Structure formats: C-alpha cells, structure tokens
Amino acid sequence: MTKRVFSGIQPSGELHLGTLLGALDNWRRMQDEYDCYYCVVDLHAMTVPYDPVEFRRIRLETAKVILAAGIDPDRVLFYYQSQVPQHPELAWILGTITGLGQLQRMTQFKEKADKAGQNLGLLAYPVLMAADILVHKAHVVPVGDDQTQHLELTRDLAERFNGRFGEEFPIPERITPKIGARVMSLQDPLSKMSKSDPDPRSRILLTDDPDVIRKKVKVAVTDSERYVEYDRTRKPGISNLLEIMSFFSGRSIDDLVDQFHDSGYGVFKEAVAEAIIEGLAPLRTRYKELSDADVAHILQKGALDARQRAEETMVSVRRAVGLDSH
Ligand code: ATP
Ligand code: LTN
Image (tube, rainbow, N blue to C red; front, top):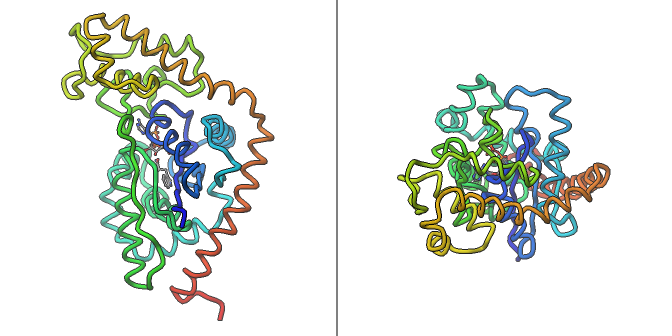
C-alpha cells in the first residue's frame, strides 16, 4: 500500500524561507512517492485575532505560493481545511478523549495565548491538527521542528482512540529535514524565522524581489568575529546563513566553510543572497504564471475529493464511537 502523507500550512502571513526549508521542500519531494494531502489550514489561522478582508487575501496568496513552490495538483489533493467539514467533526470526537492539562502544557498555546489572549480555539488547536492528520489516516507528516509537541499529541490521541474504540488510525510519523528544520530569524538568530515577527527584515519571503533579498541578507545579524564557521551556539547568525546556502546550493556546510572561511562576512553574504535568488527563481516564475482563478479552481476540486476520502474515515469512526445512523 502507498503510504499517505498529510501536512498543513496556516494562512497567517506571507510564506518565508522557514516554511520552504522546514516543510514545503519535503512536501514537493514526497509527492512522487506517496499519496499526499496538503492543506491550507484556515480554521487554525482563526485562533488569533484577524481581519476577514486581509484573511481572504492571504488565504489565496498562501495557496498560490504553495503551488508555485512545485506542489502539483495533478499528483496531490490540495484544499482549504474549512471546505472539508469532516476535519472539525473528527476534532470534536478527539476532543472528548483529550486531557485539558495536556493542552494547557503546549508551548505554542502558552506563547500565542500570552500574545493574543486565550480562547477555546487556541486551546483546541492541536486537537484539530490531530484530526487533520487522522481523518486521512496519514502515516507521515512533513513539518518543521516546532511541530514536534503537536505531533506527539496526535500520536497519543491515535493510540488512545484505537485503544478505546478499536483499531482505526495508523500512528503517524513526523518527518523533519536534516538541514532547515529550524530556520532562524535574520535579525535575532536565537528565535525562529516567523510570519508574525513585526520586523520584516527578520525573514525572506518566497516572493521577495532579488534586490530585497540582497538587502535583507546584507543587514542580517551575525557576530563580531571575522571567520565563517559552523557553530549554532557560538555563531548562530553565520550558521543559519550557512544552512540556508547549503540548502539552495546543494553543497555541504563543510565545503562552504572551506571556501568562505577567510573571505569576510561581506563576500559570504553576497554569495548567500545570490544562492537564494537563484534557488527561488523557478518559484517566482511559476508564481507569476498562476492566476487567482486557476488557484481557486484547483482548491475547489481538491476539496471535493478530500471530502469523499475523509467521509470514508468518518463512516467508520462514527460506527466505532456509536454515532452511526442505525
Ligand atoms: P510562523 O511561525 O512562521 O508564523 P507557523 O509555524 O506558526 O509559522 P505555519 O505557517 O503553518 O505556521 O507553518 C508551516 C510549516 O512551516 C510548519 O511545518 C512549520 O513547522 C514550518 N516552519 C515555519 N517556520 C519555520 C522555520 N523558521 N524553520 C523551519 N520550519 C518552519
Ligand atoms: N500547526 C501547524 C499547521 C498544521 C499542520 C496540520 C501541520 C495544522 N494542521 C496537520 C501538519 C499536519 C503549524 O505549522 N503551525
């Protein structure tokens, strides 16, 4: 049997290098080998305050960038989470077997609640994420490092459900890339590159113009030493740039350190910027070619197919928990 893959990205801001290295690149590579379900998880993005007009724009924009990154709708199911009501239905059922303490201990809940205030949706966020994955009985989930805790909960819930109601779900595995599982902010290399960072210089957007990329890399925070060396603790800024360059150039970090060790940070940064620009060129071209109407059409078709597949799981889940119609 071909293994199934599920992953999601929130439409909560413009996509950046972190999303590409941490998740999207694996999404693209897995589509040849696996049965893939990829989702713009709009219900998740509603758990912090938002503006509905901007939300609508960013949701379409997110879908467009994902397609431009090489996700092929002929090979994968690609859709908006809110258009497949089986996701929240399963989330409700899983919610009834989730301990409150477990949710309150989630790092992301604590961080977001501190910033944006608590709400039930934010607390239940990881349960909906578990439902996303389990409703398609996914075996593999490609995500960045920051999703480890959420994936653990998903595995727990799958095991708990199977234990109580009978074998239903495979226990999903997390897949994180070797390089790029945690891309750091260009302005504060001790925190992760994030959509919600108020400083736009902290991240390189996948749709940034070459000149913007050059400027952002040029002003990236490094350290006061002179040598290009890889050491994430002592030299987090330079190490982050080395990882990014290694990803785009396909060269090993050792090889890059050999070449740039004594060249000075200025020369190294110029090379990093050019590698990013060249690496993002195909995405930029595809992005320009995609119309909003094409994207909307792809998403509608994806939702139709995803609803059918998710319904197959739900028929069996409803029966298992005693909710079938006869
Ligand atoms: P952000 O923190 O940028 O606001 P997020 O992690 O809250 O984003 P998503 O956009 O839904 O939410 O994340 C999409 C995927 O990208 C996830 O798999 C996540 O792990 C990954 N990802 C996001 N930021 C990074 C990063 N800096 N490094 C590596 N992977 C990342
Ligand atoms: N919480 C994830 C987004 C997400 C997801 C998922 C990822 C929602 N549902 C299911 C993988 C599988 C994040 O990246 N912030």
